[in-house]
Length: 236
Image (cartoon, rainbow, N blue to C red; front, top):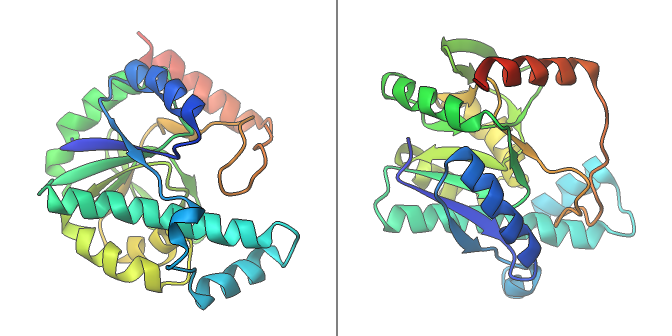
């Protein structure tokens, strides 16, 4: 399904890497830790003006703006560094995980199914989880994969070598966060999919390395019943 997997993890977030060991084991995923690029590493590579302008328009110039700007840029650089490494290693595909990735308990079973389906799909990118955005398409490709054209979040996804070069060339110049670049620029022109059901979510009640605050839990009945259905179906 992928040649290698990496978990992006800041050196100071030791507790997240330790927590991820359990997540990886439960999903049956073998992955290596990839030291995340920190804000301090980017003293000579500041965020581009276009990214600053984008975040100003989206979030406004609040007290934590500068930190979020630099953290967003560092996040992109970490993802790009993994892709450069994958290209140097000659990997046909790589799974990129962020260290707040929480797998569903049925992930191992669904991943086994997806592995059998992927050779016939010819995907350039596969999300294991993400937020489907309005205006994008979503259509069935196989029993466990849907084609998508607009997805936000980049905490768990597989990238094919077919798009390594394009991402590395375009993303830094896009003026967008890495997940927005994928959603708004890359996905509409490649063959992308998302696992069905979704297998990976961003961990809640944990301080985000970008936002600097914990993501609050919001109860949604539709998501609750959906996850309950999939857990019942694939847990046996």
